[in-house]
Image 1: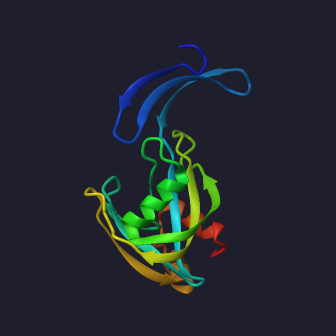
Image 2: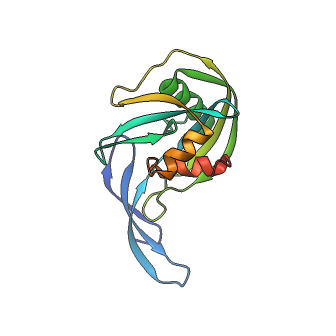
Length: 171
């Protein structure tokens, strides 16, 4: 393979695994396996200044329940903002009249291209919920104080949610 050449190892529903030959900054070449991901959006749904909606979601990959903000992978040519709008509606049953970008993160840059855009959603109004059939979760309203307590007790383990709380200035 030449520099930046890719060989497909696995094509999945959500991501691909590829083998790449990459030139390092010092000129050496390295062979890496990379998960190519289309990108994702996370939404912090604010009911008001002090209350947010948080999900308790079962994650089969780690076989446990995690506290998380609504989030999901971009579908097709969907913009990340449209992805955010879709995910908040699917996972909370609310639509937002105002969505603003807080920041972006690479959750696992050592082996994946995934970049998550983190949004703040305000002006929430009830909207029909249409859950993905392979997701198992419930939602609950938490105050800023309750969120800090969950985090302090080690109950929030999802890295993207912790980053979102930091972007909101809640830590």
